[in-house]
Length: 487
Image (cartoon, rainbow, N blue to C red; front, side):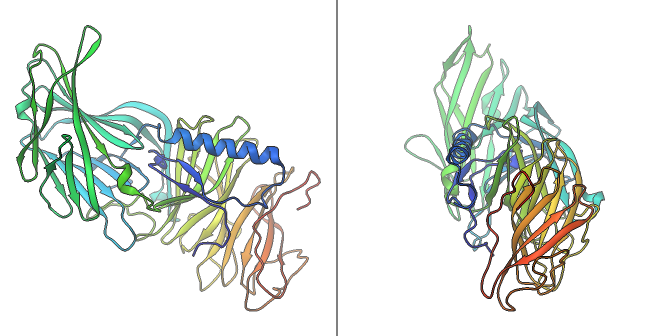
């Protein structure tokens, strides 16, 4: 259920972070919440930040994440973003495209036929950003500080031919790099889509892949050689070798020099308005780094017998992503999830660089650390939560549920000068855990009330919590704290 009137950002990814790393966040403001601030200088600054993120995100390179137990062991590296996952194994490349919730995902498999079965797979150019998974409340299943890379290389796919994968948030590329004397006629690529339709080449030389949900394009390949420091374009095209097989036909070139064949897989037009990621909260730290939280379903791996699944079958999970001040590099991307839907609605960063995130969780095993409330409050399994994440994004310093027997959501978060964390949101529980309350009882038995709760700086206790509402619907969507700590 989406909270009414909650300002949110549509995250057009890629992400990272892959995330969100592995990718990801191009933020588009769909609505603005006027209660957040009335200071025009703050509004303009915030809008400028969002516009900068919007402008720069599409330029972010893909991030490839090394599989260290968070995916099926067949997968060696993967990248993902808004509505897609790219999985690299020894035997094939699998591109998964997320469709509308009513439709199954679309798959495109690519295999180099008659290739070297023991081709070495290695990452190139490690990135600054790390990826972290906090999935469920069993810490043995958490994965932190996972490295990410700009490229992945398959060496000697064919004799004298390497394949290098890379790209940005709009397209995936792989270069076929031929050493001097290598024979391009060795290359035979099998392409299988979900519906097994035959491949086509259009009038512009693009490879057309028919899927259940539309067409995907691989642009006409760019083929070139570097000669005396200049790029020399070589004539060439795709060559259909069968209904689902392609190779390349090339014009004359200098066989004593390396040759690069560069097909470009364009997928941005395919995704349209797929809501596989949404960003609900954005903030900046004292040096201008950008933090985003929201929901994602992009960590689904369409594989059999995985050693670890995501939080829940087709469920949403929380992402927290940190970008540098120019939104040109992902510094970390972290997933938070239990066994059901989880959403991050708001976040803030303290002067020490710790990140605090709040929202809603439907999960019965949401990851908790030193919790004030270790379990969800009741039968609906919809509770607010508060999480504190280390500056590196790789450690939960504390994490707790907050709620009664019905529904709680936290839409706002604030920090006092003394380090207390304050949440505001909505509840329809008659038994919200109240303490030192100005309104100890719910205002109406059948509707939602606002609530406010303040946690101690170490997250170990609740200073006060209170209902705030009358005899009809009330929700806490805006909050700020003055220099005296008044809310």
